[in-house]
Length: 398
Image (cartoon, rainbow, N blue to C red; front, side, top):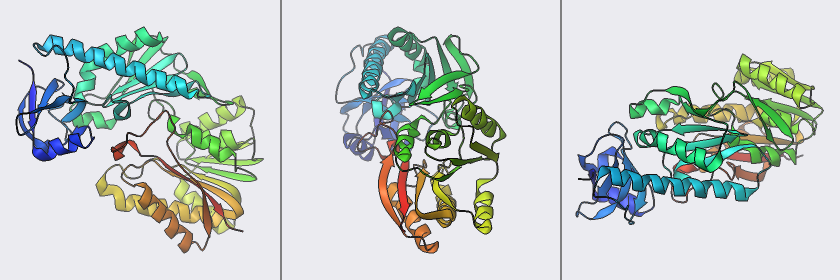
């Protein structure tokens, strides 16, 4: 007998409207264990589709299919085999899509979870190596099959499970880092355009690099000039990319390890004038303002300030603070590249913050470009959670 979950009318409507998640409040009856692939049934006993099930998460249902029938439902083993075939088909499609983008990079996202119809599964490519994250009980149980599929389709030199995100704890899963296939060295060199990075796949942010900003860095290069201030620089992505247009570059980060990595990457890329400093960015922006400093190009790419809805007010205050300070430091005709990767602060909210910062700093700015995460991190229409990165390129009016 197959595993089943009955959901409410509200849950069914959510799925029918195109969203793959059903929340715990809309789960009516469960005959399944955590990690099972389940048949999802509506309140009128109609089959809705199949999903990954979690018995710990506030998102117990993550839909794999809607309407269509998975073959082999007569037994759990046959259902799993059918699901593995579906996963293989979707991973292959995700890979083909990235190949079609012809990205000028050796590091990029191969599988972007829900946006590739592979809920809670992330796969990033770093040259000959892959980093995988399984962020729910369902995908965690599928990890051996996913690994086998990736080896078959891509023949990587090594696959690393970067299963250390805190979100796994919400699923009752351990936070681990382990090699799944081949060998994975301590450092991997990758390229984005003309810039090379030394990446630590085990300790780096996310799976090693912030791959979602690649195309925003390309866009920023079109406007960059003069004196550059790159805030929350991490591995120096913006600073390194823009340094060929800016003869004076300062990169700020609170992490000593990040600062050392920026310095090493600057030497490697032939831009030794990139000066990396270990500072609290909030404090440094205030100090720079007091000193009367001026910059022609400023980048604000902070970590997510709003990890959940409860943190939104503090996050909005933080975003306003750094944008207000940056605008006061910006020379007339200068450019501000300002970003937010907090899903809980949506585009409308972020635009309002920027507007308020412009008013309070008495700095008139125009919107030159409004951007989002790179094309290898697609947004699934109707699923706002997949649209998380906002990037505005602003110009201070002369």
